[in-house]
Image (cartoon, rainbow, N blue to C red; front, side, top):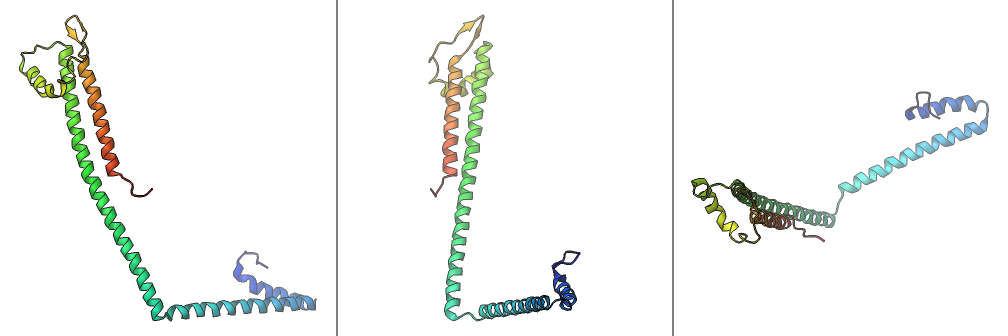
Length: 193
């Protein structure tokens, strides 16, 4: 029976008070109370005995058991070290590939910018003899040459839409996307299936 506060530590005291009050009235209740008290005492004694045996057993390991525990501990240590070393290599490889990816991004963005400037200069019909226009053409010609003349460039009122430059931008965008995907595959390769 639980006391009015609801704590379980008051149960033996409550049982004692209840059993003393009821023992005087009914001998069956008194026997039941004694049986419950004896059961609790035996249970506590068994718990203490089991805990003492467990504590004693852990202190008395045999040399064979100690060697086996050392062997297992060594295997776990070895696996942990291998795992850490593997993760370290993976992190270093990912860092190198991230740096390579950044350089590739930078180079492609410079190319996109130069081709974009060439497109704008072509759209506004900039004079080809001006130094800036010549520099932009010289820098982009190696990347634009294979696309030049692939399709006609429509003109209207002195403005020319250089469709080959747009095709070049799209092609280099796809190439950039493919290279980034390949680097991502290499950086995050899975060793487990």
